[in-house]
Image (cartoon, rainbow, N blue to C red):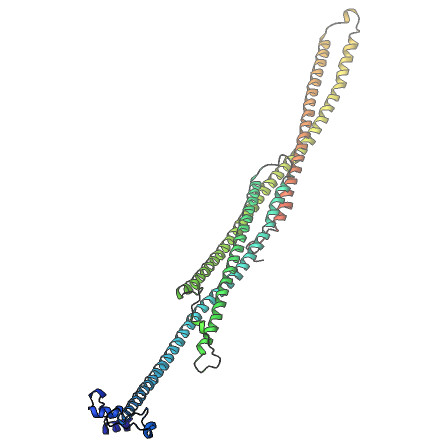
Length: 447
């Protein structure tokens, strides 16, 4: 290019003059139409379709100029192309680095969300396991209430076999009825709590599956983005996908993507909190129900103890009165025997007095006198009859008293048998059966 510039400066291009401005002679020579034009046959082949020297120089200069212009344009294009290639290369490198950096940031975001989801999944699994343990405690506690309920109902049925007058609605029966009602209420509460635990376990598992699906999607996306982050321009596994730059219609935005995961985490956190609250509630329910049952059991046992003391006291008093009654019956029998002997002893003197009076009634004539002996014999008979009447009346009273004592003895023996039966039922049947009452550990579902 420098040589061309020197050449052009040394030999400037001649000025081209239009044919209309040339002299007439020169113009005619140029056209070969002048008066002195050679038009012989010998020169016919040398003057047809030929250019002038000026035209030849003009054409050369025009060719030089065109070559210079083309070369200059080519150099300018080559320079611009090199600059454009360098700029686009740098831009592509910067863009790739920025894309790699953004993919790396995306990997960090996904790793954070993965960690949160994994933590929530682990917490839900732990909550579910703990709830399953609590559910088993509730079921064991529910099974354990069957024994107290059977004891209470058996005690009530056994006490129905008491005899009159001991078949009363006493404090023991009221406490037993209260115990049976308490156990039924506790069983209903435990059943409802078990259903609540089952529902919470189902919700935990559903949200765990949701979080696991989200976590699995993020793991897959993380692996894809990690693979993309490792790609570079020298990678051998890259291919051309012309239509990959189009956005998917179902693609989410960063806001909806983060909101979706955040909502899953919030729901999982709510279920975690609900599980924690439910476990605390189950602990309180089991502890309270066990304490209520044991307190009611102690109340029933105390009522049984007092009732047994009352029965023993009444039994001892009845036995004491029976002993005195038996002694009185013996004394009364001796009294009756004495009265009968006294009556029998009065019969001989009465017969003597009556015989005397009868014999004296056979005295003749005036000898049949109402003398002092006669009056005394008559009064003796009357006195003996009055004594016999009094003795017989007293005998009747003694015999009636003996019969009353016998009735009292039979009544006392019956009452003693009734009290003995009641005491046997309360102490030997009910109290012994209540010794099988579950412990606090069994009622709280630990055994």
